[in-house]
Image 1: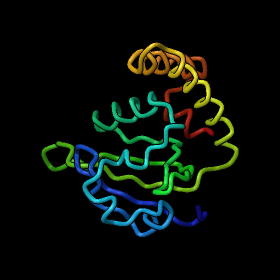
Image 2 (image 1 turned 45 degrees about the vertical axis):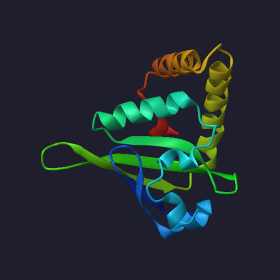
Image 3 (image 1 turned 30 degrees about the vertical axis):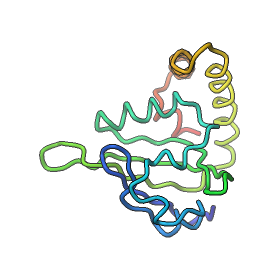
Length: 160
């Protein structure tokens, strides 16, 4: 990714893509037709623990913004890391009408720490008898890790 470019996308309240910037198309190798009306998870890479997405969606659905380091996948199954800032779009009645995501090139130093954490969380998810148990176990591990850091998720992410 270029240092000075931003990937932008917008979705409806269910996460279906309604807008994708030209840089999103360039970096992901998807066409606009490939992406429009598809779930944003079309770019989800399995190297991001499911508990990160659980945390992300919990916060977004409660009307909070989220910062996160994510691995996205391209159309050809390649991948690229991003530092994402996702915000809910809220109408005049206070209802969420969609989501807006800006993604930038992440700092290399931050990725080293995030990669360590994600590797541990993925191992916990894979080490259980079913996906639901793996998700809950990794979410518990993430919660414990943040408590040990004395920070909530946003504080931790923004200090990397």
